[in-house]
Length: 614
Ligand code: AGP
Image 1 (cartoon, helix red, strand yellow):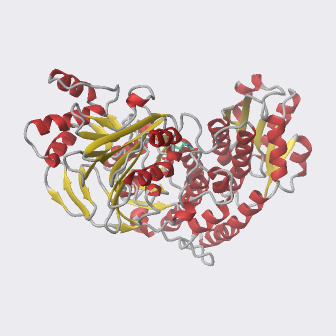
Image 2 (cartoon, rainbow, N blue to C red):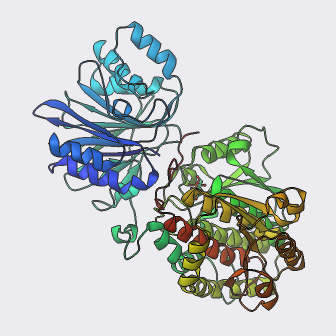
Image 3 (cartoon, helix red, strand yellow):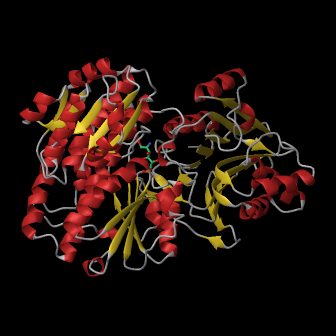
């Protein structure tokens, strides 16, 4: 999704902004551009496609200045092309604007401004913003007031940054709604703006988050804040603990590979400080849900999108089993429009790695509006989901750069298990003995994750060689591992562009069985649990129809090894933790197939890391 970077200080702004944009590349984009002020004139450079095209343009037509704004665009209004790339300028080339989000009322605004004589050069919704500011300036307002009045008229959810030739030392930023984030980075005699922390982490860890309806006026020596209603505001910075090295690729070929391989560590971090392994006692202070209130809950609804929704489906099993509370799982995009039956005794839990997914934020807002208690499981510290929820659990997985979510998925599963145990303890549905047994399994989990990940590089290479030509895969699982079949299929399709479907194994005979042949491998999750026999029979049914089976099974399971064509082995653990181990081979399988097919693993086509539009 769109990325935003801004700089004002004494250094050359253009390379700093370009470097920041590069750190946001993982969000996905189709064009890029920047604006600076050189010799008192606004200087705009834009290019379709990747950042290297913009860099090439800058080599031919250099731009220099100590203030700049930059943007990577992910098209919503108007095709990806140079003309539609940001920044957009006003009629007199005085102002430049970049935006992340959708201006919902752009049509009436464009008609109004066109009628006043403004000339539009792009098809974008964003361009109305810069003409609106121009119109207010023409009415005699100063720059800040013109910007404030303009931003206040814009409907939707946005992050906006404005640069003016008349104020060559000032950046103006605003956040409207819950979609695009804006972070002000505080340096020594220099200031930064960004849509996402990794863009500026190398330069500063002191940041200030803009909230809905807030504006920042940023100069090299500091920032002032005000609300879009004109009232004044004071904000203070917080310190971000991540270091730039942890956001870099290290020795790995792709971020996704690195993130898969570091799951033993990310899960250790996720567990850290939350559970006493001896007593099994779980503490989740940021959840802000004391035991007496946990006992009043009569229902939970999990809202999330994509991979996070799959985590929610696994979480349902954990929560119902340990806390004996009914759990519904809903796609956030559906929940927000279905007038859900929730109230003060419902806990609506959002799961979102980025904490900025527009649908998930809207679902949280809907839950709040209906009086439900809200909580979120987030990876991005300080993200909007965290801030608008009554309580939260941090994944502690560290930055996830690859568009395909891997370590955030397993971290959210561990958080869900901790939540289920916490609620089980509070509600008296989890005995101390069972809590201790689970704690023991959790203590062993990181090491088991390490074992699965360190085994069988050649195995996956062989599978990739064998199956990279296939155009369809079917993934089957049952019970708590059915969502893992969904997740395995999602991973494969998003990075390798192979069509893959996840199905509850018992449903195979009701339709998908018609598809079975040698060219559609069937990946089954057949672990020794309460539906093990059923999974064995599914494998037999696939084999009887000439199908090829790749089975995820326990390392000592000779029965599955004898029946399946290929096996991916995992160790034994508690059935509630099995999904965390079972998904690892599916992540690796997807990764190796995508690499073999020559795909852009970290930035798959059409996808964005943070989906901040509806
Ligand atoms: C995961 O691999 C996806 N790219 C995507 O489905 C993602 O999980 C979804 O967009 C939700 O993101 P979030 O967790 O940041 O809310």
